Length: 164
Ligand code: SF4
Image (cartoon, rainbow, N blue to C red; front, side, top):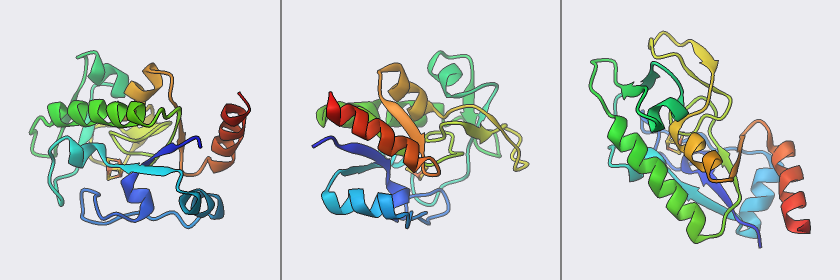
């Protein structure tokens, strides 16, 4: 069975920076959960950050820029937490590889898990186009990443992968 890597917070695990989860109640998601397809993972917790933790935003670029050393990830007081995010991304890739995973559904907007939108680094609630660090690393290794609001697209990719 084709497994899917999933942001742990989308399964309701209270791992977000503010100690909450963001459980998806979408029927497709629930169907995959009951099938045992979903492999939950939180890159930030696995990268060594606590719950709760200060919010963090990418400063100076996107997740790919962080991986290439051109941008950093900061908290509002300027603490550099980049290494935790990069470590978490590497561990997410390792987890995906251990299951032979080729598809991920990750939480939109996060500096780790975002796939089309991230915050702009100003902590003013503004979002810009871009992907988080974990998403960028997974995509570099051929894993398709979809946001929780694109489950139909993820289902189409899943069907395609299962036909191969
Ligand atoms: Fe959810 Fe990803 Fe943030 Fe963890 S790092 S809380 S899985 S969005």
